[in-house]
Length: 441
Ligand SMILES: NC(=O)c1ccc[n+]([C@@H]2O[C@H](COP(=O)([O-])OP(=O)(O)OC[C@H]3O[C@@H](n4cnc5c(N)ncnc54)[C@H](O)[C@@H]3O)[C@@H](O)[C@H]2O)c1
Ligand SMILES: O=c1ccn([C@@H]2O[C@H](COP(=O)(O)OP(=O)(O)O[C@H]3O[C@H](CO)[C@@H](O)[C@H](O)[C@H]3O)[C@@H](O)[C@H]2O)c(=O)[nH]1
Image (tube, rainbow, N blue to C red; front, top):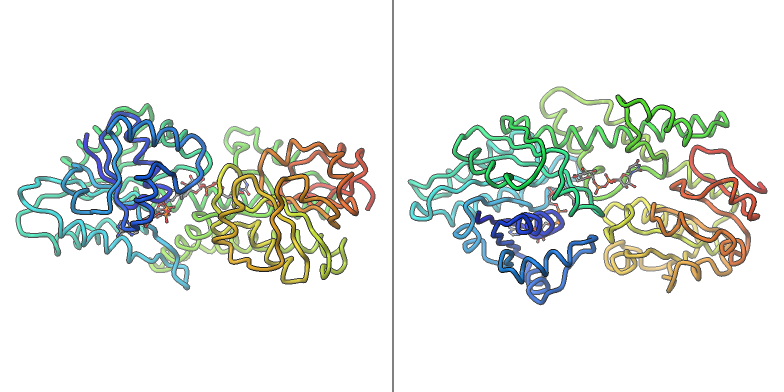
């Protein structure tokens, strides 16, 4: 089939590439000319494992194209996906101006000669957005054009987007239009996954409800981790003990510094705002946010307690990305930890396997930080090591190197990556989340 994606960011590029990989012909459109030039020059603007080779392969096969022209995209794609940003406004509600603009742009490109088009919202949007998109397209399109509107939320995770897209747990298609639905079934025919067909409003709600539930699971275990710290229990054992119940599941029960990234913080806020606007406030989610913020503060309090004063302290920081296997630092908790320590006068020597460049460009940290050339040299002469992102590089480190290189052998592990007993046996004083401290303290 001929498909078009409007918005070639994280979701647009990964989704478009995977659609091409399963045999569709895909045109990716973006209104940022630099991004399209980069892609046309064969470079990939984001780090995502496995993506670069798939882009190159599908461009070479003639199945994947990039353009800045929405008109070309609308002309060539029978199904037109919208994958533009839906950022939060200061009050937490969703800024839908990008979606509204694309709806108008698509409408202005439609003509009766082009024929029927399915307009699919892939961006994460509040319930009832599909209705607004349909109204907008109807208002701005010439008389006589035929189109259908569909909600098809995306559940990929950064860092494993290619696998998530090629092997999804489920595909959700929200549509009130049989013609659109038939075409959507053809789009997803090459994928082996359950397809859940719903009305548009339910599909939109599924996305916010899913992300908020996952954030709730993380906050739940983080609240439990505080109780573990107060009682001397071990949150890793508790997570295993509750997670082996199939009804609960072990995933998303990793206690740590709390959730970050471009999705959970904004989507929880959005769901709170949506529920309030519908007159059904969702107070539970406010608590999810509160716990998430407190988790970071409790971790910083541990650092302060041990280092006493952060001013003039040199701290090695491992991790800048919001999670492992990505260079994305949007809403990264690691960056928040860094900013707080710098504000208290510490100097950071930071290292991350992929996110140093993105941190330099997008974190907003301009002073108080140096970037180490490699993971181990970040440690040299530092007063403490803080681990802030769950990269496997840190979990697999030779502990004797940490002991040898730090000035004082203090480790604060915000992601529970190291083994407390092994750390103590190496002579480290080791503090993590929801587990008793180990070593000299
Ligand atoms: N990042 C994720 O992991 C993820 C996963 C699932 C869903 N989502 C949702 O998908 C949506 C997109 O997120 P993202 O992370 O890909 O955003 P992004 O910022 O990486 O990409 C959006 C792209 O849209 C382009 N754009 C904006 N207006 C445009 C227009 N009028 N015409 C053409 N291009 C335009 C921008 O230049 C940018 O390249 C959001 O609603 C997000 O919540 C994101
Ligand atoms: O047990 C856990 C799992 C995750 N996290 C943190 O939660 C955040 C989000 O992680 P993850 O969900 O793996 O990454 P995202 O790429 O943000 O993916 C989420 O957000 C996407 C955008 O909406 C959705 O498509 C995905 O399904 C959803 O998992 C990160 O800061 C993680 O460090 C934890 O603290 N503990």
